[in-house]
Image 1: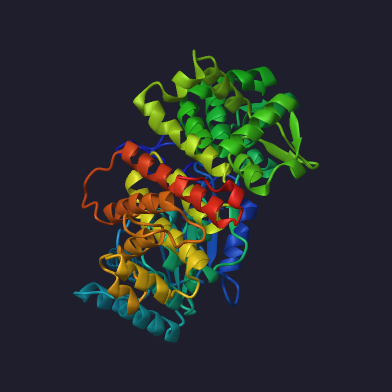
Image 2: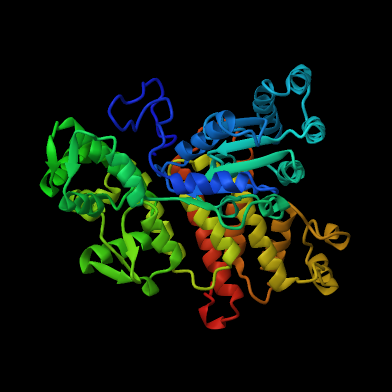
Length: 542
């Protein structure tokens, strides 16, 4: 099995033995145990809702396509099955999601439930309620729908879909006539952006352990090798395949393509595999570059240690960092160690290290600056010892958006600002009541807009005015116990960017602008971590 969405539009399927690019989905190779486990979970008396998780290029789309084919052609558990790639034409609003979902459902129902399909097709305005009614009728007819949603990270990353939609999907999902299978690069809970959406029960419907799509195992490789019927592989050649690729599908299959193209006959040796890897490297350069760029700086440092020392004990590496490398085929795991640094990645890193100056390589050109400045911010975030965990999670999601999705990050800044305000209020005004003596003092000092604070606790932009007064104005002294004036100034800037992010109106957002906003958010988190930790020695004086 192979790659998923990274296929060039307008390009026909690669006609080599193992197609890896094109506008159609590549055929399944190996993965029998994985496919079987998903199919069995969907055929139980009470089937699971399943989330499939795997790195880019790991083959999630190919797996889902095979699941869809199986239930459409070979098994009658589900009377309607549809495959929806959310990575293309991603719905931007709740309404768009419901409309596209209904279109897919309408098409899937045509074969076995034509009356229901026609009913949905003739609706002028479709809503959640009509879908729920159709699923109730299906239940009475013993019908079932399997909804396979690929690229589910994309609608979650844009942060525009609301809790209302997720709650509606949850209500649909608890009906016995509907089951979901989703695919994403991380678990769904890790991808949620909107604070309100996090509290939806939709995320609780899925089986607790996601199906992980990772590197090939020996059975998967054996299945691939059977397609090369004109050659056989020596033991050394097989070892070399593992050393060079660690079984990562894209790397394995492109290497095998090069062996097939070389018209090798008879036994393929370790030397022939190394030559094939050299030939494959040019076409694998961009995917390796992408996969490496998606790793955090901490994960990259772990890999360099493994490359240098041959192995690192798993107890010395967090599960998250280890999984980031293993899932991309950069290292292998066994006997309590991370080992076998991927040779293709080593070659890639060697080519990077040979350039003149590290600083020039990283930041000398605008494109390189845009690509690598995220690492600077990531390292800065890693320095924040006392930062609130939820705030840190928002920041790391922002780093992941850059530099490809600056508008997505800006659209989610409001969540950072709102959470920062809550942290401040928890420390300074835990009961969300403004002391009357503060109000009296501000009135005496002639401060404007004070009376509104006597009737209700401020929301929106009014929170900035309250924080301004609390941290000291031209007329009034500070009354805060923890936060200082620089926190107020940072909050003002972040809040303004949050407003801008909600009203981009199709205006292109510069990467540099988004980086500036993200840097402000990071320093706001740093300041709050220092001030709210209660360690007065770490507070800076103005």
